[in-house]
Image 1 (cartoon, rainbow, N blue to C red):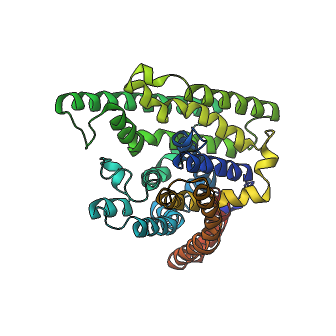
Image 2: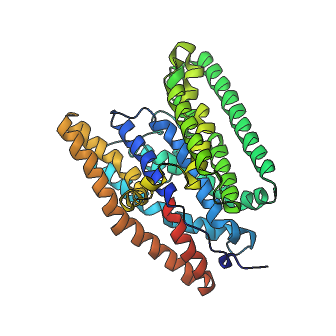
Image 3: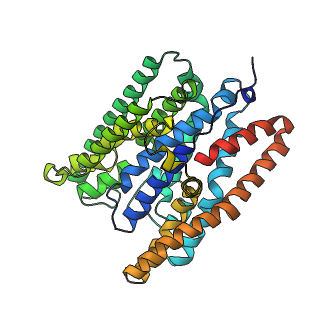
Length: 379
C-alpha cells in the first residue's frame, strides 16, 4: 500500500480567498453594517472545514498513518492558540461577567447547553469553534467510510441524505422546543420563540454536523477530480447560489412565524453554500483570479485570527458610541491585527505545537505534519 505522503495534492488558494470574503461578511454582520449574510456564512465555514480536512487527511487516514489522537492533537494546535488569545482579550474588555459562562466558553462546552447566559457570552463567535471541535472527533472515523463510495453519484446521494437528516433533526428539535416553551413559558432562559430557536438550534453541534460531513464528501470529490466544475459550470453555479442567497434572505420570513423565520439562520442556505463551495474549490470561476491574489490569500490565511478577535474590536466600537470614525478604526484595526496575529502568534504557536507532536511520535510523522501544514492554511 502506498504511503499517504506519496501523492502530491494541488493547493486550493481560491478557497483561502473565499474564506476571507465569508469572514468579512460575519464581521460586517456583527458590526451591524452592510452584510445581511453573517449567520449564513458560518455554513460556508463548516462545509469548507469538512472539505479541506477530508482533502488533507484522506490518504493518511486510509493508510492509517494518522490515528484519532494524533489528528485531534494536530487540530488542537491549529485552533487553540487564537481561541485562547481571543478569549483573554474579550475577558479584559468584559471583566466582571459570569465565571460560569467564562469557563464554559473557554473550555468550548457552551454549545451543549446553549442557554441565554452561556451561548454568546464573552467572545461570542467562539461557539462555532466549539462546534468544530465536535466535528473533528467524527472525521477520522467517517472519512474512510465515505471514501468507500466509489461512484460520484453515491457520494452525491449521501450528501442529499445528510441534508435531509439535518432538516429532520432541525424540525423535530424545533417542535420539541416550542412545545416546552408553550408549557413552561421559558426554556434555557429564553421566553420568546424566535430567540430560542435561533440561539439553541444554530449552536447545537449535532444539528450542524451534517454541514461538516457534506463538506467532507465534497473534499473527497475534489480529491478525485480537482476541477469539479468546468469554468462555465462554475460561473453558473456561483450565479445560481448567489441568487439563491439573496432571494432567500429577503423573503418575508417574519410574516410566516418564528418556526419558518428561524430556518433563515442557516438551514435553508446549506444547498446554496454547498454549491458555492464546490465552485470555489474548482478554481475555474470568473472571480478565481481575484480570490487568488496574494493580498486576498494573505487575508484568507489570517481570517481565523480575524474571526477570533473581531468581537473584541466590536466591543470597543460599542464603547466609543458606534460612530463612523470608531467603525473605520475598529474594522481596519481588526484586519491589521488579524494579519499580525496570524504571523506572530497563530503560525508560530501551530508550528511549535506540531514540532512537539513530531518529537513525541517520532520522525516518521514529520512528512505528514509538513504536508498538512501547507493545506491547512485553508482552514
